[in-house]
Length: 128
Image (tube, rainbow, N blue to C red; front, side, top):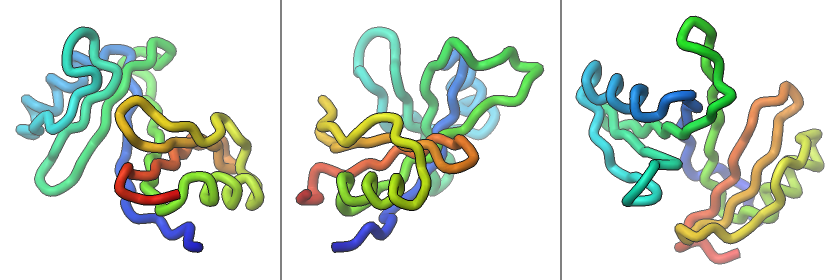
């Protein structure tokens, strides 16, 4: 049983998701590669910048543009439940226990000892 991290990408929280996505598309020719949900107000957008991915999600509590934003980390792991238990055992604070998501992944959330949010995601092709 391994808790090895398979992939890591940043997710920016924004008080104005549409504005922030437009900025990255305009400034860096970012390509939208995923949007959830497909219709209506987006709750998550994944952008490709070169060979890298950047996630953007809405958060009305994010301060104005003059203040610094916040970053969450998404770690794809082989086994979500085991990674969650390992993180909590190492001193992380449990935020959301492992749960199956409507888009097919299993996801948990913890806060590291400094309070940074870590989303532990298990891709649908990874058996628990």
